[in-house]
Length: 217
Image 1: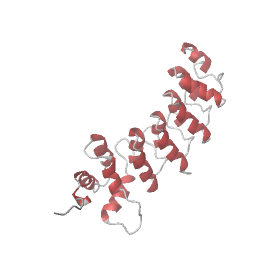
Image 2: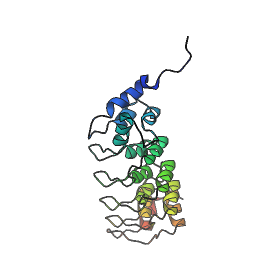
Image 3: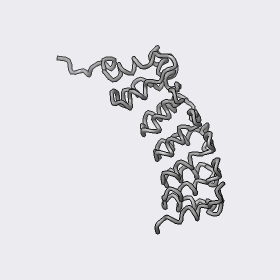
Image 4: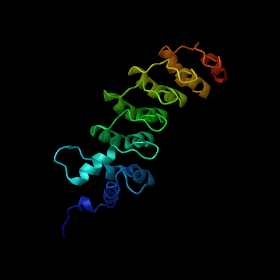
């Protein structure tokens, strides 16, 4: 009896990925991953390293890696959302856009910052094309999102990569304002450590100190 492992082409998860790839203009790969019908390894199996001399399946994988769904999310957005670190690295290896914006202008870096995905943030920031100061349609930056959610480690990564610590959104709120309003004392301390201005008023004439009055400690 043969003890060899079954052929990869017979893997049910990989077969599902193969079926998702041929449809031009559709982005089904991350839907499959999030549904639990396939896992990250199945997608990694189909997103090959070698970009030369590929078979048709690999060409479809490369094409699918650059697709957007109905909300303009790319596979890299979904990887950042759900914390699929190896998949994010593989997608970056396929030279997908790190600054791809969704319908609201959100980039994969903003999604990673909102969810505190520090390793994905690190991977994105290693790509020289990543714009750490990019804003969405509301002038919100990745640093605003990290501050809103209280992700101090993400804040540190972003500021060390030249994120604007006093960036103003459309209401003239800074990341410090967002952290204070959300009650995240650790994020407030981290931003102050990086010289965020606690006296900058927003459009409602509120400064971060006023917004932080409800914080304990």
